[in-house]
Image (cartoon, rainbow, N blue to C red; front, side):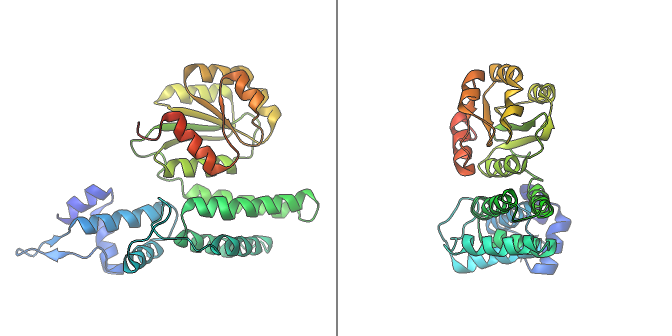
Length: 296
């Protein structure tokens, strides 16, 4: 195919592909008898793999080297979001490195650690096995008075900003649509962000409202377009309970799930919702079961 055809199939501009070819030597083209650059299906797959890693927040240069390195190593079994196996020591080492960077208030080093982790492991491993344990560790230290509120806020801010950079394409695609929101008054949304990223990696399109969302706004967003699942999540039980009537209305017009530490079985049963597990991987699997799996 010509470069314009390759660009259209991959959803990127020909200018970007030409820039990659100059800087990184990919994708490599054959030449037709007329001198035109021609690309095959292998080039298309390579470009798609690079774009997938870049959409996860990885710098283009790192994404290119990761994909080329993976191809040199040959096929490997691993998570569906990354074809390479994950060393068993990576999460433990990642926890130590990320915690050390955050505890010294070094944002640049914190992002460097996250860059390295995202280059080596699937996003669910980075989030569930590194980021969540580190934030839990810092939060527990703060509750005991062993860490300052400044550190807790700094760490949360770094993680929230980084997760947000990975959400740029989660509203695209043709899969089922999930509407995600925190109830009015709830200001903690890192867990919901992380859940949304895992959900998007399993094929869902995400419509994200975020923190402190009035129930009327959630209902408006639900009715504004296709919504296959609405998820309301928070860490404060009283904030979710205060929205009992609105939650019941939402459950009456489509599948509703409650999540986060503030969600209880009693409330979920009372409003006709599904209670999602606290574990993010399990919550993602449960969400897929509610829909019968993405794409059904």
